[in-house]
Length: 162
Image 1 (cartoon, rainbow, N blue to C red):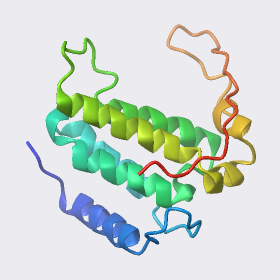
Image 2 (image 1 turned 30 degrees about the vertical axis):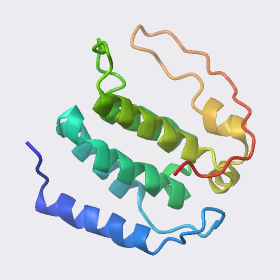
Image 3 (image 1 turned 90 degrees about the vertical axis):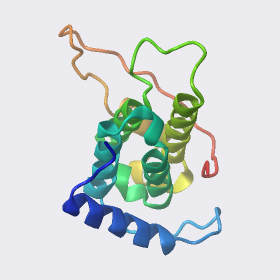
Image 4 (image 1 turned 180 degrees about the vertical axis):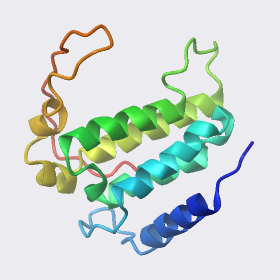
């Protein structure tokens, strides 16, 4: 069922208003104001909807992180956003059907673009370094109780993935 609460409707309206205020120039570094809570609320809506209907919500989250780097201003936010958008896309639902349905393929593509938007220059500047964005979550406990090693990823300057 495609539904959201009145509170979620207000959140969606806030995100749409903020994104409408964004510069249409992809080179613009002027961020818009979208709170972390609003961005994650958008993704929680997608998680409740059937995979085939999640496209617009995942796309909204992808655009939000591209224009509001404050959503992922801490290394833990980067990890949480990546995990949440991948889960909302259907990435974590197993097993994947063969052939991959177009809707699942599209959702995953948008999720990966959303993750790529995290590594744009304004977000990287806020985090300090590309390594901090990824390795800042080192030492998180896995479900088996052991510590997972993080891997450093060196990222070149990249543009927003619209």
